[in-house]
Length: 366
Ligand code: SAH
Image 1 (spheres, helix red, strand yellow):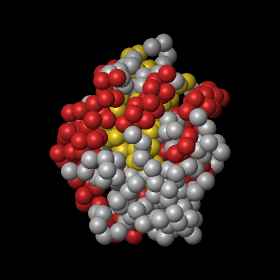
Image 2 (tube, helix red, strand yellow; image 1 turned 90 degrees about the horizontal axis):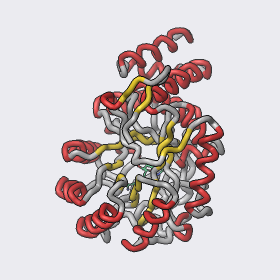
Image 3 (cartoon, helix red, strand yellow; image 1 turned 60 degrees about the vertical axis):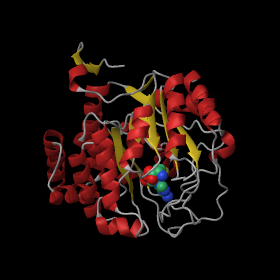
């Protein structure tokens, strides 16, 4: 395709919010750096329309690195005997929230491996306590695949959001990243259950995971355009030395930020984080992510003693700093590129909340 044709595909994507599979493949496979620059301009304009210059913070609490699963890409997979395993107590989790609240976080993400110790009852108890202590905060869970009943129980206890990346929307590719006990079908069932219960749902995928093709990324985009999640988290795949993918290549920053740009055009009102993995492959990765259309950053609130133990991949950044340091560092980085940290739950924009200002349109929901 001629470069001008890729630009027109970007224009079609902006107006139609989706492409045919063939066009997705062309866009993802054949774009030039100039096309990417054009995409990012459009993505920033759209993000500005719905969110102004706001960047939302989510405080990430990595509360357990025990995991019963064995995903081939993940450093905390059950069969990695070299991991020093930890769990935070309910009290420690609440302490992380308190630290976070004082630092201006109004959204907490509890993420962990699929740890059987954290039964439905224990998660419900933790969610209830956070909900009671911080009624003005959003509570997000990211704890993997559970039965419908558990998702419902967490929701009734006060959780409002759930992050569960689909990882890849292609069945065969899914099978190359996971043992046969894990299926794309069940992943999709979980996402449907979560949405039907009323959660704000986040999904996503790794960019440059082993065996991934441009066709697979096209399928990811078609899946996301169809699911219409409120949040989409993507980041480059980064190998972990104690996994079967130890010698695979990382995903690139360029392709990851390009995918952030197309996500913004596909789901204009979505919340898209500039992820830690993106900040790990490039020292300004998160800034480039924000400049490509992302509008969320997820600083770590986990106690410093456990940070290094939650190693999904090698060389993860921000494992040595206290929460307060991360909070201030990220705010500086955000301000330097012309955006502002907003202290609120960071709910998705909704067209009913859009108001016309003087020259700009911004969202008034807090
Ligand atoms: N157990 C939870 C949380 C998983 S960790 C769940 O299953 O949802 C969150 C995300 O980190 C994963 O969904 C995966 O996309 C990403 N991740 C895991 N290993 C990675 C790696 N080696 N490189 C980059 N991202 C990785």
